[in-house]
Length: 184
Image 1 (cartoon, rainbow, N blue to C red):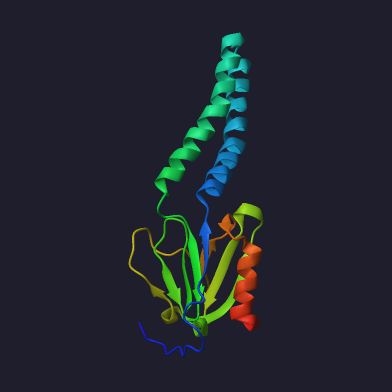
Image 2: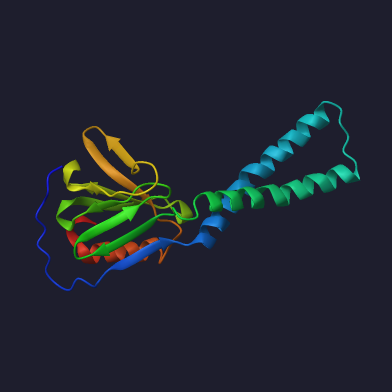
């Protein structure tokens, strides 16, 4: 890796932090899992009924319980799995530091940012940061998988899930526009 000189002008205590809130992660996982689980449960019931099965009152209660309990338990387990590794992003005069959920952190100086854009909507919003060159970014030590990247031809970009970060993606975009107005 090549070191790049980044002249720091201004105070060093102007860090702005964005974090994925655990409650928002749980609620988002809950409704996404419920949106997948309920149709699968209904399809299973329809297939059973087509094969001659006739549900009784006890079976209906069992299906209603499964509809409510399974998504809540699985969302809770997902939250426990990622408890200490939810996504985050910090901006300061030194650059931007970020980590996607379950991934190792990355540092990128402001001079190394080629472009920044938001993609997606709502809780599925992603921040795509394209560095000027791959050697500008430094993967920091830590637990988790490799940083999440998107490659298109020779272009490489980092992808961070920011949809449930607090403050929201609009505030993040405003902060990045303040730091690098020509690249947002």
